[in-house]
Image 1 (cartoon, rainbow, N blue to C red):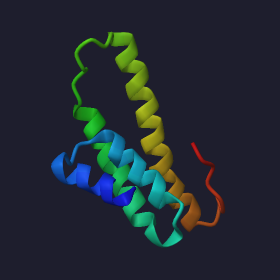
Image 2: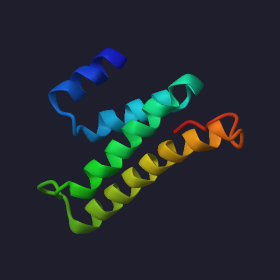
Image 3: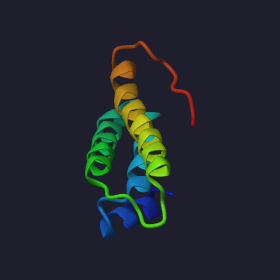
Length: 93
């Protein structure tokens, strides 16, 4: 999985799905929290500049962005909670 995800990111560093996937993956690894946070921050940055895809209504785009921003914020914040010992085990999506 990592090889494929990293390969896709090498071709498209703004691949939101892969950024979120890798952030989720690394968030569960106490020694890799910095990677999880970096991928989450990059995903949130990509979302801020993403254009609405063709064929998607404004309402659908708003919902999709909201969901993806929530995931990015969860993965970004989960690392901080684990470092502080507040969240010993992350929930899975």
